Length: 309
Image 1 (cartoon, rainbow, N blue to C red):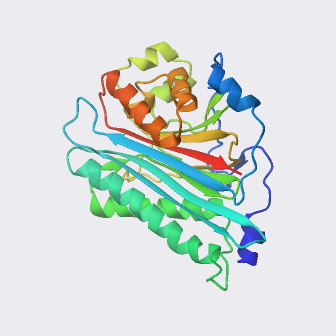
Image 2 (image 1 turned 60 degrees about the vertical axis):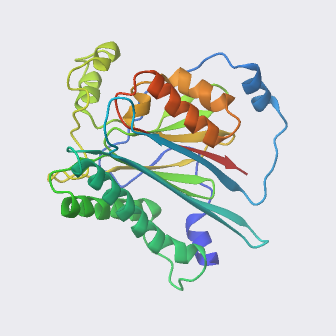
Image 3 (image 1 turned 90 degrees about the vertical axis):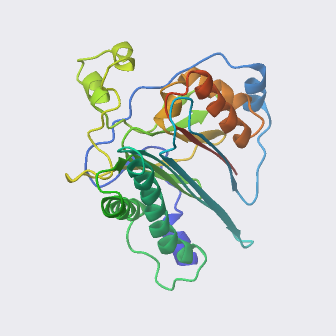
């Protein structure tokens, strides 16, 4: 296990580490601030508690929504911890996939992608984490995650021809989180000083039009083709996922969600719900409730991760 730790657990620099150049990861300037409530101020101002071993607290929730008759989203959470007296290491894998392509095709596509990616990563990394693999992987975590997305792509092409899916995955090892992203599900970092930062860039037609200056943000919200994606698993044209590595926020949260949440609930409302909830599970249920209260036009999936260390 020590060789595995030496390879993957060097303290990363606190900035984005991009994958070998595919397309540059340009994070949108989507940092919002809002007045903090008394509860939020207390959380920021309170004395820091050191947790040993460091651990990951996870909540999740899902709903078919108010206007759909079936669910095409898939979410997956997997987390573990190993502490042997010398060091404590949390490990977590968190995935949301939003399927498309009509009844059966969408849900099979999202389920196949999430399962294939997770199976690949867990089979490859878990033995090394537990010290059962005498030859730790030589590839970087970003390369491993990119290969996992390829496995997910092949699973979709095989099991759901004609269907497609988004895929947003976060792999947490120690204080480091490596993300892979295709489509328009999203990952955010939530900081207790009032910031909420989008960590993924939508691969959608409407996002590209906004970036080109052809649409304003207000126009994009009501654009007729706002759900059209130019990159998704299941498409036959070659593509590469966005992959990048960060220090996980703590205190703070990682939020992963389908567009059934972020398309209905504002950043400010999501931030307030998360930071005023007693735990991640309660926060996720309240987020889903807020999306349904806003009309629930799509399936809603949400995962909230809190690192304590």
